[in-house]
Amino acid sequence: MVYNEQALNGITEILELELETVQAELAEVNVRVSDLKKVIADLDKTSSSEAEIAGLGFSATGADMAWRTWVERRRRTVLNALAQIMAQRENIREKLRKAHGKEQSFKTVIHQMHQEQKRVESRKLQKQSDLDLIVKGFST
Image (tube, rainbow, N blue to C red; front, side):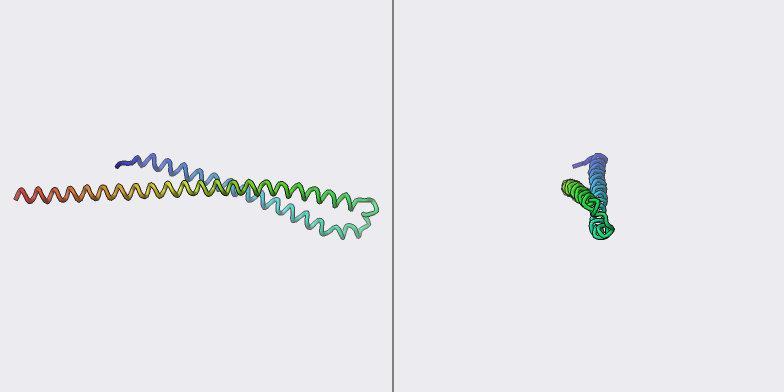
């Protein structure tokens, strides 16, 4: 059986590009997750320094309560965004798993096709060799 190597290579290339695209998506989402985690850490540092702010006399004006409220609201907003992005990351991981599986499966099939093609060619050569020996035997 003869296979169109150019077509097989083209499909392999497409599958590799698909995999690379999904890997790039995942890398981008991972950066966003990291950035949001840094924002949360900064907000946590800010809340831990509230005691220092309270010690400066801001409580008389209510500024400390306004600050705490803002920090908590911002933290909730960032946590919600983080949850959404982490859900998106899980979806991308699933896409990555599927893309990797398709690529590996196709490469395995191509390898098996090449092995089968080699076996067929080897059998043809063996048959030809046998025929040549038989013809030699009759001609002597």
